[in-house]
Image 1 (spheres, rainbow, N blue to C red):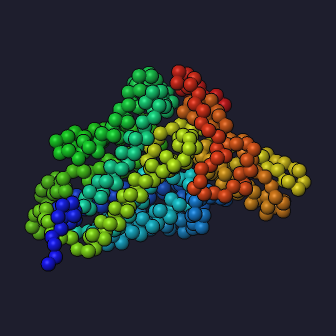
Image 2 (image 1 turned 90 degrees about the horizontal axis):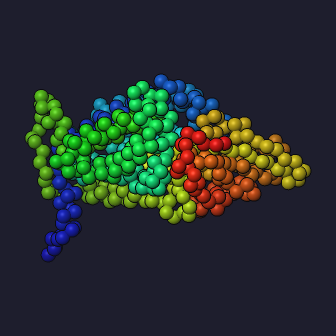
Image 3 (image 1 turned 180 degrees about the vertical axis):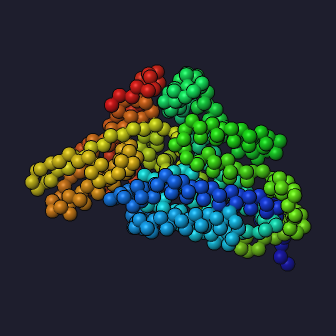
Length: 452
């Protein structure tokens, strides 16, 4: 006689089989599709496709993804048009899982072309489209765990963005907030106020508290309306002050609606006819495909939790050496300006050259790579390959790299004695990155007076 499952296993099976109103899931899909269309439209409106993907002679690719290359100009434009069509399909509900899967592949391909184009909200778009592709779709009802999967994905962004702000610069020195607000001193009415130190401290602390508290506040029904109103106000304020955030505030405003009760769209649009009976939570045993999806989502969640924590496996300050910085929801956490110049030496002839990175990279690539060690090293490899193609023998490529970090004076980032061209990229710690030595003067100095 087969024993009935008890304890946590029985509860897990009941939760796996429980169903709720699918209106919230549908709203998430529609909002995501419209946001995807907005992102694609911005690429065309700002004419970014050519400068970012077609015009560069070299691309700073991700580890193990160097084989990914951009289409020619017509192909890249057609690719983005296809992404726009897929976004419309997701929003309209036409073969939504297929459209989401194709969007995920196509959008992730674009993001993998060049590391200098990495944006947190683009990474979130890839993850959310993956979830929309694998989660079951129902018109009237949906498994309860699908709603929680979407909530967890949005919640992870806020959680790790808040945890990342728990550092001395952010909390004790209001850096880099003081730098950013100082640059807005010419804003009408509030400009002089933004240059006050106490305002920077207030915004730094409130930003950290918001990120850490918003998810619990959204999960509790009593505080949910007030929390969402605060969320909208917070993101609108950051979008106004920091336009470089792009559509990130709008992505978070739209996707965070998933924290409301599953039937919230029907309550909002009561005039729409209900299709079928009102869905209720049930405790049916989930089919094997649902349990397999749950197992896959558990693995997906484990990866999402591990990636932001991987920097603990490396020595040093992650905000300085950037080992484990990407894919970790470190949203606008540091202000860094870098300078890089390469010294190339031919070991056979003894000749040497000074090489500027803009001889190989676009201005945007130079700006982004100048304070990120892995891209500085990859550029050194590009330079070495170019010298080899020009008929030179073995060359040594060293870098004079300096970074001004959170308003501090320039400090040397890379060991100038290391041949960067001889280093094989990998996951091991970059011992050629010099340790971070904080400059105490930055805590009390003028945040707008960074020296070269």
